[in-house]
Amino acid sequence: MERKEIEEKVKEFMVEDLELDEEKITPDARLKEDIGVDSLDFVDIVVIVERKFGFKIKTEEMAGVKTFKDFCDYIEKKTA
Image (cartoon, rainbow, N blue to C red; front, side, top):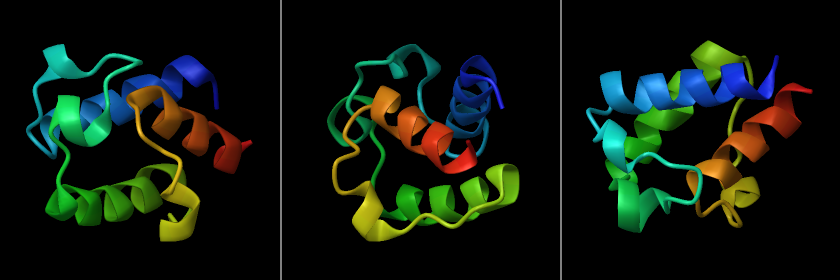
């Protein structure tokens, strides 16, 4: 899957499924502080990523994921 496609899919579900503000979703935006992802959103993200990308998120692997770019990097690595 191409990087651009990953970014588009992630942005799409963040806006449509989690109802987050599209304007705030930029590569350097921090998931919690800038975009507004909370712990309940994270539960939804786990389910959505499994459905859309075909793998399960492991909590310990997400420790270093802080920004939208980090999250897309993580998905790209897992789907490569």
